[in-house]
Length: 139
Length: 139
DNA sequence: CTTTCTGCAAACGATTTGCAGCAGC
DNA sequence: GCTGCTGCAAATCGTTTGCAGAAAG
Image 1 (cartoon, each protein chain N blue to C red):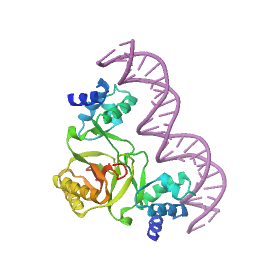
Image 2 (cartoon, chains in turn green, yellow, red, brown):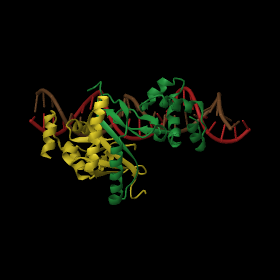
Image 3 (cartoon, rainbow over the protein chains, first blue to last red):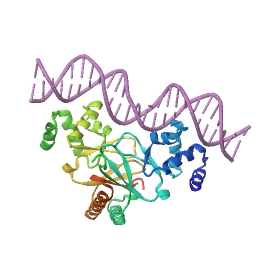
Image 4 (cartoon, protein in one colour):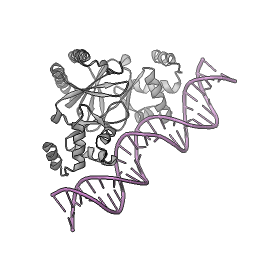
């Protein structure tokens, strides 16, 4: 949490109570959550402040925005704070679940990225692997 | 193209000139394109018809909607019409490029999906692998 | 004190929709 | 003809923004 405050300070912004409350809410969840869920967890926050502060937190490399096919964006803490992982996305209800990245899979992705860099000139910085299907409830 | 018409008919809809024009535009592009680009390629179409028909085409399992982090959705033909592939997404300019899926990578993903099904009950139907980085122009 | 943050309410913009006329079967 | 499709313009809704007051340093 100190680390988070420092990252915010380092970008020339202030680690305010509101901002830390958002981080708190994200930290308490084992999966990416929506703005609506952040507001449920921290009802003292104004919606516009949440939107505004998530942008600040993203710039401070503390929060990551997740886009799925569903209507709302979701947010999670940056991977260097939580560890690298991927997502299970339910095509029925839109739920998103974190899942650890198997080592073999990671290795394959890195190999592929290198090969692609050689053949196309594209410089891969991150990757994103989503498994789309039905969660236990919807199956 | 006949195949596309059949899929549309099979869902109880009509394979109209507008709808086939959209498929035409998607077919002509080696990468997913935006609604704006569809309208540039087929200027006779009304914007609202494009939105409406893309929904119809999605339901007919002919078109797939792609969501990136950029402002616009993108569309491409269904994978069983074009072949399985993944995407290179430029974090700078938002460009999206198709890339063939290396066999080793596919194998790793399937293994991972099976393992996940066993441990979490999640039934994977598809997967999505995006490499995020800088394209040749932006690097 | 000066600068950044906040909350409110209004604006924005991609997408969706109501409706009246047109086209496919 | 009947039903589904189209174009237009208006509505929708997640998200962004202007502004005046509050809080941080």
